[in-house]
Image (cartoon, rainbow, N blue to C red; front, side, top):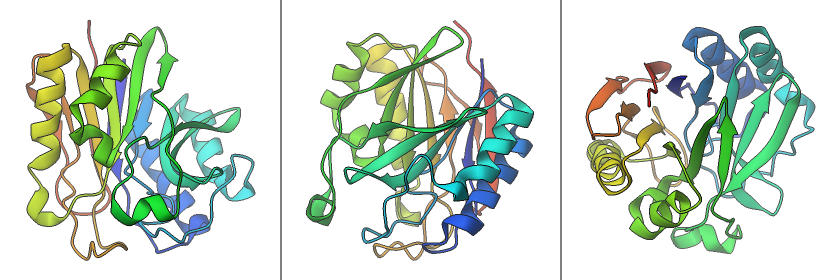
Amino acid sequence: MSIAVAQPRCTDYDVTVNAVAHAEAVRAAHARVVVFPEMSLTGYWLDAAPVSPDDERLAPIVAACAETGTLALVGAPVPGPRIGVLAVDADGARVAYGKVHLHGSEAAHFVPGEHTVIEVDGWRLGLAVCRDTGIPEHAARTAALGIDGYVAGVVHADHEAEVHGERARRVAADHGVWVATAAFAGPTGGGFDRTSGRSGIWSADGRRVAEAGAAPDGIARAVFTK
């Protein structure tokens, strides 16, 4: 199964503009699944309004997914409110996941979600958002549901560029699964004036097989194999 990690440019709070950037990334990725960073649709602003799955501003992403046969896993604040993942395809959007392990001030704005697996073309993908990936128990409990891959959207500062690779290799080593991590690129809220980018994909043996650069609009792509 082809999978891509994308790190589109982001305009603070502007779901309309950011949805267009996401749609462009979906078309450019040429992948069955495209994973986006944490809160990619609004930027990492804890006061951003939740985005409902039936929000008309998601229409460009739905259209791009319909054209390409893609499932897009989009980062956004969602009803709950949760730091969530919207699963977008030709049929529309749904809330697929809420971040389980909230970090610091996030807990004042959001409630935690639950460990979740989605199935795409026979592949079982465990979902994660940022701090989730740093908690070994999260991957363990998700893997216990039966997974072939572990996919995450994160926001890391530029000096933390190696963090998601270290975590991905640990998940691969512990559970023998593919890992795909989409990391925010460009400035955003929460003090993240400079973010890491460098989204990547790691094979089940912990080998990095694809990596984007540090700049916004980068995409990395690979094919998951069993």
